[in-house]
Image (cartoon, rainbow, N blue to C red; front, side):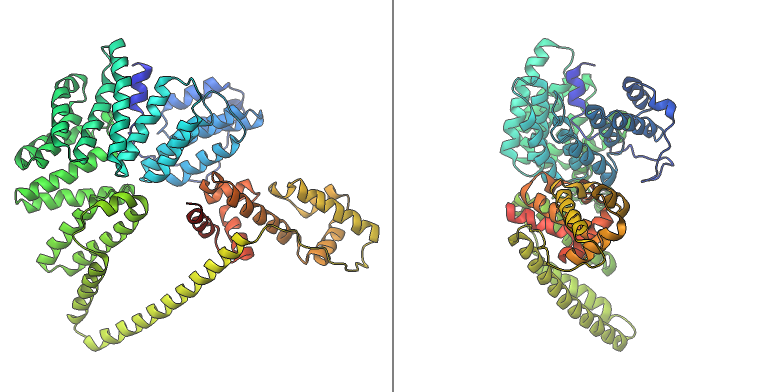
Length: 569
């Protein structure tokens, strides 16, 4: 397989069906034998990929690679080690993000032919895999920005292809169409040079067909799909074109043909041998349009079966797309007709939740969709279902009392929530408007410590703050006292008298103040996870950082970052 075809293959999120099992629990510290650290990087990398990046045993080699890089202070190899671990755990959002964010922190100021550009590419891949299309697009654009002048055409084509996918998923169909057409020009040149390798051209063409379809250009979609389906079949990619054909037939009001074509290729979409070319969106489209086609044929049982499969897929992966709203409307109507209020209420809740997620991640597309409902009516229907269920209860008096109590509690809860929101907003406003200032030194008497010793400690503390030495993890009283040329007793007395704090409070407050200023000024830093931010400013855990931040400011760091991003947009 050529470099070109490999690049095309990895454009797609091909790990939907390959989850990480194994006995190695998250957070478990691996014991790395010294013998592994003696091996060279090429050997460790080779063993990692020989085992396969879905094999739990491969983690040992990736961790050894990373540790070796750290021990040798080799930044490039450290970045590669983090990259290996992000590859391995990409199905685990929290863990893969931890590794890729750590790599981005470590890459600060480091530049070579591939880094940090490929790290932003990997970050984009992880975000898209977990349905975070806006965040994925931001990272793809950063990757494209970092590609140097004179970068290989294949790298630029790779970035543009992925940006086109994301633009389409966010509803910017014209932008996506333009980018896919630009990618096709590259693919045609490549195909002219290597006529036997048509996979890249066929993958791009298939995605352009999908884009035409979503943009309601059915004639263009049908023409392009029909022109390439025979070549794709010979190349082993015919099932993607059959999926396109089935969806187009549904849109052309041919549901019988649609069902036959899509059901025929479902086994191919689920076959792990096709994992590198099958995107999660392909299976989503298959279930969605089978449900629609069966509904058009008045075969409700089959239709609802595929809608439920689609719902299960969304729940299992967190990969939510706008079309799911219509599915929930159909399921709500079905269970309403059966008088099954519990199921009706379930899908009302799912629709309300989904709409809020889509409004955040697909704001442009979500508002373009024709809504067959609005939220106030949906909430009224929900209340009506609840009221109906309550009325049918045997003990109406008890239920009425219970509902009154719950409503009272809810009102109190809402009042308390409003109060907390206002408190948070005021705290955030104070943080934004205030600049980082040093606490003024109070002229106090310290009879327990010689005056010249006090002056020296204060001077050294000033240097300690200026050097940002408080950002190092595990700053202890004994270590700090030794570096200042004093003892822990004198240090504690001076901090209590002049700062009115103990050592832990003093260090944490410095770290929080530094973190706030960096979050205000550095847009990249705002994209870090809470764990990565905590590590950057000296905290060992995200929990310790969040607790210290809230104690100092009155709000959680996640809230501060979210509101800060809003003010910058």
